[in-house]
Amino acid sequence: MGYGIFGFLVLIADLYAIYQVMTSSAGTAAKVAWTVVILVLPVIGFLVWVGFGPRGRATAA
Image (cartoon, rainbow, N blue to C red; front, side):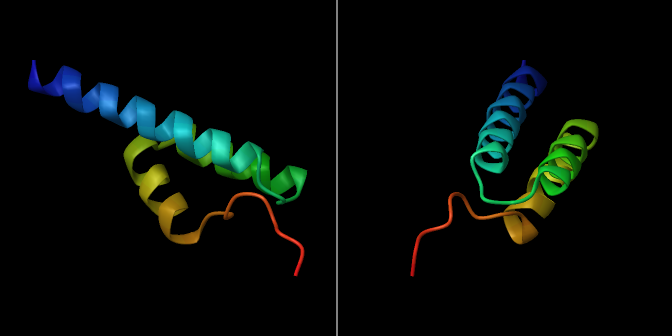
């Protein structure tokens, strides 16, 4: 049962990360690359995205 809850939390985190990547101002190639990394390596990909991924929508300075 514990693994089921962990898997669900990983799924929610990955869906959130993919949504944030898709709504970011990053280029198409970067969006595809981040999405593939998150899908292929769900836990590690999410953690790498948190540290180095695109940060949402760009705001005008």
